[in-house]
Length: 232
Image 1 (cartoon, one colour):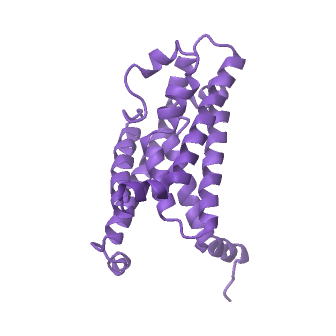
Image 2: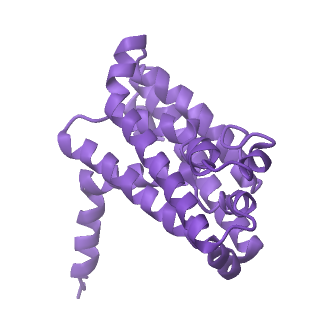
Image 3: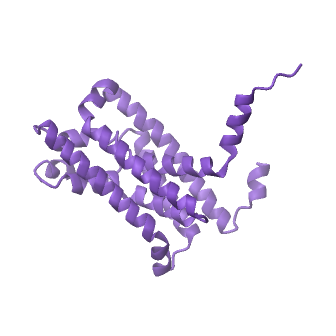
């Protein structure tokens, strides 16, 4: 007798739907690049000596800036491609390179120089608008996150995919606010070691996403055929 697990069948069908595949790709590539957990040490340094209300206000500004910047590039992505004559395969390969560099830094549990330059944290500690610069941009909405959003937008063929991208940006911004506003509690629960482990795991997944962007770009250029990938 062969036993069939109905739940397993439903789960398999759910995983196979293009809605789930694209949404998982969008939320993972955007969230891993924004990576609010890796920003916790810098955020605490920026807000050192601040009360809970000011920390929450700075976290809100950072998350809102992240949302506005990424949403703006999502909506203007196609226009930017046309304006500069950039093809999607070229941007996929360039974006994959940026993701790879950031992912390799994350594997060492450190912030990439594209997300946080030396001295940014110290200077921001004396700024009233530190939630916008450098927290919102480039710490959260850095070149990697912007590139990832624009690559995703370049792959959009139907309206629901754009809605999925905008929804993932909103969810990422909201989670970033929650993580940063409760940075002390998050660091207390996870500990420095836990945060490093989490960043390394995200870095590993980000490197895999970078390789997928490379493969997609080379496939779109015709240098790799889909039949070759399937046979391998």
